Length: 76
Length: 380
Image 1 (spheres, one colour):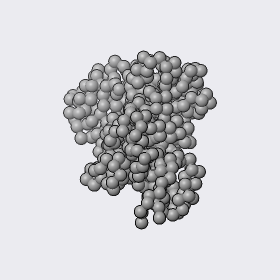
Image 2: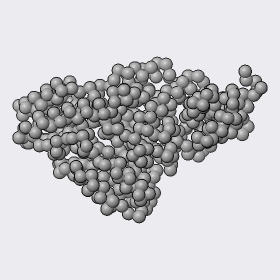
Image 3: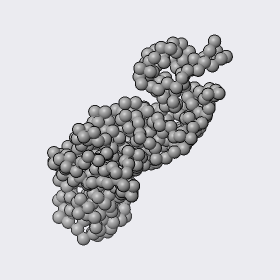
Image 4: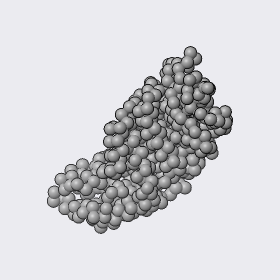
């Protein structure tokens, strides 16, 4: 099963997103963005074990710029 | 020593500020947000805690609106040099610090012009009318101190911000002397940019400051470099706060600033203001009984002043008075206070003045001792 990551512009936005989702009862964890062929260099996102789609909607409604989604294979 | 130079930097700092700095140095020694390992993220959490505390303290829309700077001067430079373009006009008050005047003067070399609006102490209507009278179609920014760092005179920046909104002109407020002393609500007051000293009324360490953008945006950064984001691009990221924070940040300083903000929040800004104002009024009353002491303003009262008082002694230069007080164990600031505009306004450009500013840690005994020392100033 994948590990749903929501990719964000900076660690500040990742932490803000985590705190916002917590207010909605959704747990999220700040992590460094996995490096892929498309995304080079530094970046941060949040790992959302459950309700990732709802989480993304909440963040979008709050005006937080979402860079994309990632699924990390092999996560627990 | 009796330390009454708190307008330059507050001293002593609260113990929790020193503890927070030591903890950051001891336990959070990684580069915040750069490396992705646990210690780096823990360090970034400390930065974020301070952003959140500052956003709450000034009622900014969110932590992303808060950028860390070296000091208030850098924050002011960032706004002035990123908002203004060749051909633009700016308005400043007649009481500005060189942190505003020097960057404004430098910008004239790039085709920017500026006008100083006259502040009328005690008459906010007249002050606002003076600001209105110097606005032009090409005015793109108002930069204004909330309180004179020399005379303690408060400028009605909330009303000037409203004036700016009427004409679509943003305002940058220099609150070096007012943050932590008077309540500031960025959203309610409509301040587009708030430039803050961390080491004064917020009781943080030296080398800390804040630039708060109400919109969470800045036209551009005046410094480019590594931000820990979008490293594959050679273009500076355009998202605050990282946009304005190139290079490794001052994590121990930021941790101390967070503790300072919490200290002020716990004590309460109105309580600190009331305490310091009473001390300044007591000092004013004591000095006003002296025929050879010149005071330049009305007795400071809450509506129109912050707790900063400057004076001169007849026949002695301000520097001489400062040195004599130092020999008696009293720390004050003589001279021009990096604010020749404010001294020109009051006619003290040649002799300067002796500035006194208490802090939350100052007390009545110290003020009374200062007044007594002033009785002996000629003999020293």
